[in-house]
Amino acid sequence: MRHTKLMEGAREVAKRLSDAGHQAYFAGGCVRDLLLGFEPKDFDIATDARPEDVRRLFRRRVEVGAAFGVVRVLLEDGREYEVATFRTEDGYEDGRRPDHVEYSTSADEDVQRRDFTINALLMDPKTEGIIDKVQGRKDLEAGLVRAVGDAHRRFREDRLRMLRAVRFSARFGFVIEDDTWAAMKAHASELRVVSRERVVAELHGIWRSSRPGRGLMLLRESGLLGPALPFLAGVPEEDLLALETRLARLPELLFEPDPLFVVAWALHLDAVQAAPAEPWAQRLVQDFKLSRSLARAITDVLAWRSVLCAPEQSRIGRCRQLLIAPEWATAFGFLRAREGGASASAEWWRTAERELREHPPALDARLGGDDLRALGLAPGPAFKEILEEVELEVLEGRLETKEESLAWVRAKA
Image (cartoon, rainbow, N blue to C red; front, side):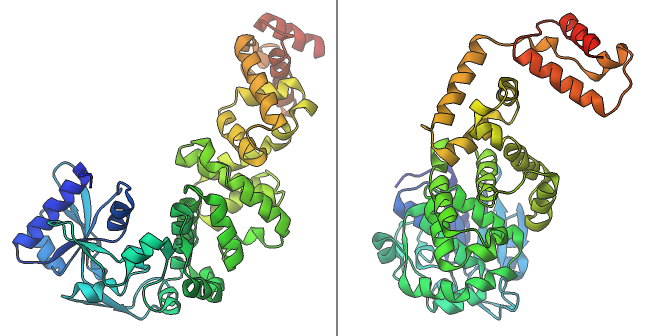
């Protein structure tokens, strides 16, 4: 088992707890990932130490979930670890958080409150021995996502767990166990009580996984798709199946998260033929709590949709405007996901990009508002049209200097 700097820091935190007479185990996703051969992105530590004990032992800390016994411990070099007190939970009136938390000294009790067996494994930091009270290791080996205990109860406690089951299936290629799947279908409509921010975070996790198309299939077949993305209600099944195929191409794009999310959202809106108008950007911000920059980027890509998908029917200057636009790489990723990297349109764009590099237009010949005012033209709606037409003429190679562009405007005035 590979020992990273992050893991060594977790050992240091656990050792300080155990030296003070407390139990301390690696818990949850880090244990799962270690057993699957993945490098954990974080380490959580479960302990019988109460929050006040953790505060005494660690000077640098942030209490991110004091009501739930969670303290984030910071080491001197900036590494962070969540230390959570063993606990039992009860009463989930909001379908997300427990109304009552009781601290425990039993690791056995603590794992029973967790979501899925593959996330309920503990590891002894000293021996690397696995403590498995829920047959989680067996489910890991079988490739199963299974709720701990009664699946209906787990999902009533936290409806977001249904989306997490889909995310784990999409990430690892695991099958959702039959009883867990049946409970997801029974409670799917209850996802509507979960905040949009948390739903979006899980959707982004599904889209970043290695099997986002599988994720959409599970959302569709479980009944979670409508509550998660209401604007897809009424989309014909054949279009949703096409969307699954398009999402399955996302891992091929090798994008960083932000452009990947832009492409994924654009694909979903494209499935309902959503217009790239400003109200859609506003709706994404309001309904899904996306940042304004992300919503704008999504609608910017959709605004190029007709040019992207049918470049041979578009003016060459418009195509070249896209090639030099900041959103070009993301827009081309949208096209590759939508139609496939070997489509005729994708090949057309590759050729056009190569030709533009080999024969770059004289971009300095473009004009600005000050140039038009110097010609005596009054600012107004026509300004934008004139500047746009000059840029198209430049990109198509008919204007090569600013003087030629100014003369062109004088002749048109």
